[in-house]
Image: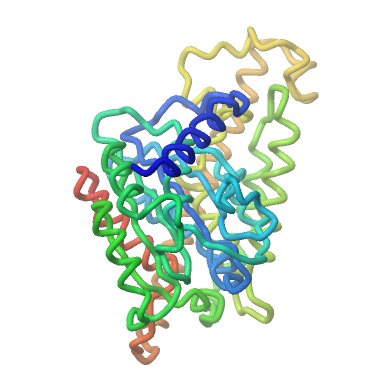
Length: 385
């Protein structure tokens, strides 16, 4: 490692130690998958950000199909923005690894493009050093680095150094080149992924935003049930009110992610399916999820000032019954959403089968889902039949 690289590594490690402590994530539900997305936010990357807003929930839904159901955590980095500090390599951590998918989507919707200098090796090594990666046996630890300029621009940290650190940490780095695979700089992205034991793919960053949204007879009912599902959340604790409000905000962000004039709000429909699935977990602020996942949790011991108003006037036994009733309501709604989503997908698949085949590069979600599916199977996961 060069002297400059050692200085960078030391600075990254010091920043990680100086960061404020985070609240613990929920107790793992299954075999871990840690997924870190690193998105280029230089001036030419609006299509990538729009695609991520549209398709994050579809990626989550693909992961939810894996068996056994994984314990998913997601982190987000952005890089290449001119307002970020040069000392960081123009890299910014948006969200640490978390099971709170609403926080990830909130951060994703806050990204803006401007710049810049896109240092692939730097964002990779920063993510490797920053994150508290799972230490569980069989954990799948992934980084996806997405961008459209040369991958070897970093003059302080080389791609070889970044790859060595990734392999030492047991993290697989995959690359998403936002451009044609025939471009002269595409092989650099593919080569870096290969050095990391990962996979390099090329995409059309605008494809997801430009694809024709297919409307079905099930869309309105899915969104109506999604709104009803929100009424089953029973907030608690210091952050309960804030988290409940953020849930509603991310519902609105998903609705707004649809391109102007789109026939169907695909992001909102994908988010509804995620909220009906096993990977949308909110036990740190929702009593339904907390009581479902933590069998040792005693609602009677929760201080009154951490209860929502609707529970304060009830006896301890009545509080438990109230939460159980909300749990039953949610389970019923989730089942209905899952059934309608399956019917909707059949219609969408049939309509897409009628469309002419092209040689265009894949969309962001198609690329990520294909890579994750392959790498998850190598770790013992299987897609649902």
